[in-house]
Image (cartoon, rainbow, N blue to C red; front, side, top):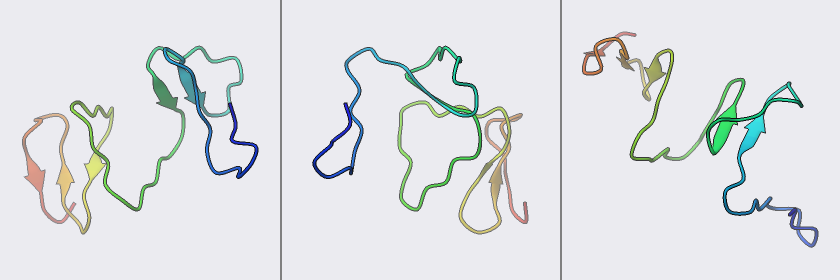
Length: 75
C-alpha cells in the first residue's frame, strides 16, 4: 500500500518480504533484503545486524566481522 495522499511512505502487510535491488524476480528470504549500498543519516538499531563485509563507524574505525570483536582504528 502506497500512501497516495502524501507519497511519504510505503506500507507492507504482515509477513510480507521485501527485496530492493535490480532483480525484479528475486524472492527474498528475510523480511527486508537490499542488494546494493545502504546509506543512513540516523541510527540503525536492531537485535541482530549481519554483514558479509565490514561495518564502518563514524570517523575512521571499523568493526572486523571476522573476529566479531576487534575494532581497528584508522580503518
